[in-house]
Image: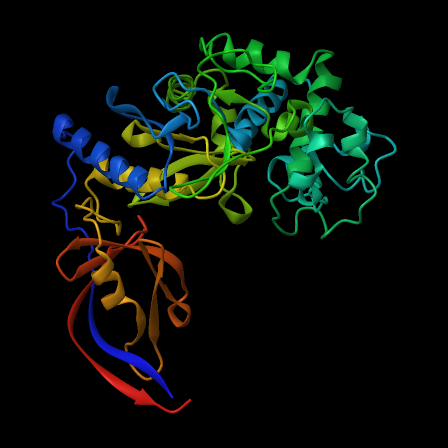
Amino acid sequence: MKRILILTLLFTFSLITFVTAQEAVNTSDVSRKLDSFLQMATKLSQFNGSVLVSYHGAILLNNGYGFKNVMDKIPNNTQSIFQIGSITKEFTSTVILSLESQDKLSLQDKLSKYFPDFPSGDQISIHHLLTHTSGLYNYTSDIEREDSAVIGRPVDRNLILQRFINQPLAFKPGSAYSYCNSGYFLLGMIIEKVTGTSWEENVRKLILAPLEMSHSGFDFIGLKDTDKATGYQVLDDDRQQVDIVWDSTVSYAAGSMYATTSDILRWSKAIVEKRLLPPASWNAAFAPRLHGYGYGWSVDSLLGERCVGHGGGIPGFSSHMLIFPEKDLEIIVLSNVHENTFVEPVSKILASLVLDKPYIYLEPRAILPVTTNEIQAVVGTYRLDNKHQINILARGEKLYIEAPSNMLPLTRLYKEEENAFFIGNITLNIQSKLKKAKLEKSAD
């Protein structure tokens, strides 16, 4: 025989109600809301990094959260330098579009023009590489943390090329979408073949130097700067696991760059103002194709507004930038954590607060300590109905909740007031209040 707690739970799914959005906002009030939300996300171990939000030219938020280096207790700040992962693809695509505008290449050029011995090279175009529609095998798919001795040092481009050049195509080029770092690795090599100079030098000359992005670059391992953030695989109350660092030659034109939030804002402003490239090139970059992907940009709508951006993930770091061109709203979220970090949801929630649009998220609230007696009283299996139940567990002095039937994985449960708890996930706004419980025996 086993005992199952039958408990009535009141789940409050709160959808924040806003008044109609207005162009003019109370900047101090919005700034407080942004900061309050990020402070909570940091307490819940769901964000650690630096954030910058600019709206109509006004900086609403520019802060660091959590630690740049946990061991030395050095906090993140506005100068923290992070690897930005696949946001690098925006820079690579911009160089390609610049070369096209100068008639130095065509987006319809086939790979065989630059790599005569490339299998299926006469089927794959630069357009396919830019839009992740080439069908090429993604070379980063088989790189594991166990390969740190290989990926943590400079590697010859051709060794990376051999990881995918002879793999069969997953589909006919142009017929489907599959995110592929191999395509952007090849774009970097094409840039070098066309210009006779390195991919890095092309990015510096076209973008970094004109925009005065003086805290951005490529060789993160070799960077000697006290503002350089330490990257963590996992960072929370229980685990502070420093991650491996990929050498820039491994991620190359697909994801090797580093930057600060201020530098990415300079880049974002250039995008909104359509500088560096002819208008036709920017229009092509932001034209959504398969899977809503343009030329190096994710193109979408959020909160009823058109937005463009990109995310980035590389061991030790995660990033997300979100731009609403018509609103002149730029959100840059950079984190020195790879796994338990919510960079994309954070950027979207921040956008909802600035634009005053409805969005589901966890509202900031008090977090109270839980006593041993409370833990013992709460732990158990709770049946919601005949088909659904939740489990509340304790690990030390911490409470966790899981609901397999509702696809809720093991998640921290926090106390906010007497007999009231909330689920510690910033993308949810769920509160449970314990009303009255009774014990029932059930057959094994």
